[in-house]
Structures are given as structure tokens and as C-alpha cells.
Length: 251
Image (tube, rainbow, N blue to C red; front, side, top):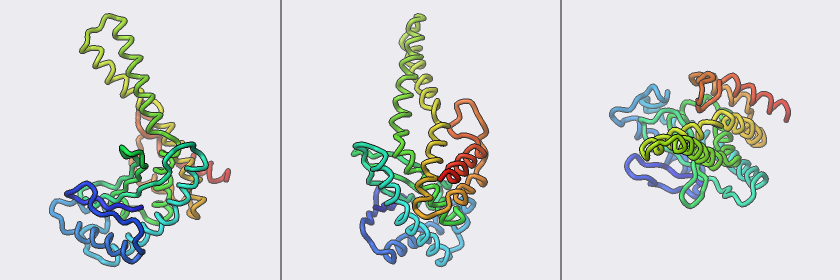
């Protein structure tokens, strides 16, 4: 299922089973209307600001092609690898023009997994392989249960550090601060590992969907390299590319 996020309201338009022509028209309308919004930063996306219907059509058609192809593969992989998980992915597009290229995964209060793309990301990717890999990576986070594992690690970190401060005679304010710091450390402890796991499983999903994950992972070459920072959220780009190449070669 595809949703379009409005700039003013949280969930404006639901597109459950529309035709490619209908969806393309709606995506084009959103892209072209975003071009005229004051204060938008055209550096975020090459197509913004040029008013080109051809660019909007190409962006929309590539996105629909990737979603139609990758989503069912990700859902099958989810059902194969998990027990009791909700594998009905909801694909969301954020059409606010001030958002930088980004994609992320989260779960609604009802437990439905969501993969969100910004429009600027849709225009920044250079080919369908890159977009497919990004989608495969984000769906992999849900399949691997990273959000739940991260939350559990944060809880453990908060409890451990708060317990240490309490034993040493810390007051209520110090214990509360220790909980916050412990939760942060706990949530970051496995972040890099989770990203590499998602890269590996995302490679599997991308390849099974008929796209080239190695070519898709070239997207990393255009991202700032986070390096190997202590408690960083992402591993070095070189490690991520190596993971993709190694997984693809094994397959």
C-alpha cells in the first residue's frame, strides 16, 4: 500500500489499489507543486525547481516500479524469516520540499511496518537499483527486529547505569540522568551492527527482486562517510559496501 504525506496534515491521501497511471499522476502533481513552494532548497533534489513534467513522470514511474517489485519480495522474506510479525509493509512518501534525501522504517501503534521516503530521495537516486536497495535495506530493519532489539538494549543500558549510580548513593536527579545516558548508550551499542545486518539482508531482498544490489549500494559513495565513531549510528561506508559485495557474491 502507498500513502502520500501532506505538508499540512499527517496522512492526506491513501492509494491502496490505484493503477500505475493514476499513481503516476498523483506523484507528478505533488512533485510539481513542491517546486513552487517558497523556501525549498533545490540542492536537496536535482529535479526540484525545474518544473519539468518529464522529470516528475520519470521519478514517479521509477518509484512505482520499484515498490511494485520489491514490496512483495520483502513481505515474502519477512514471512519466511519471522514468526508472528506483521509483514504488510506500508510505503509512505513525504512530499515536503524542505526535507533532505532520507528513508527510514518505523512501526505504527497498530503494529504495521512503515517505510518512508522523502521526495528528494526519489529524485536523488541515480537508478532503480539504488532505490530498490534503499527499500530492501529499510524493510530488512523490520524483518530483523532492530527496533525492538534497540529498545531492549536501551532499557538494559538505562537499568544498569541507574543501578550503578544508585548503589554509589546517587540522588533521584542523578539516577534519572544516569537512566537517560544509559539508554542512549544502550540504543547506540548495536547501531552499526544493525546497519550492516540490514545491508546484508537488504542485498538478499534486492537481488531476489531482480535488481543489482552492488550497483544499488553505490548510493553510499555519495553519502558523507561517518567513519568509525564511538557510539556512532552508522558504520563506515567502506564496511557497508564490503558487506553488500560479500553477500551478493555468496548468493
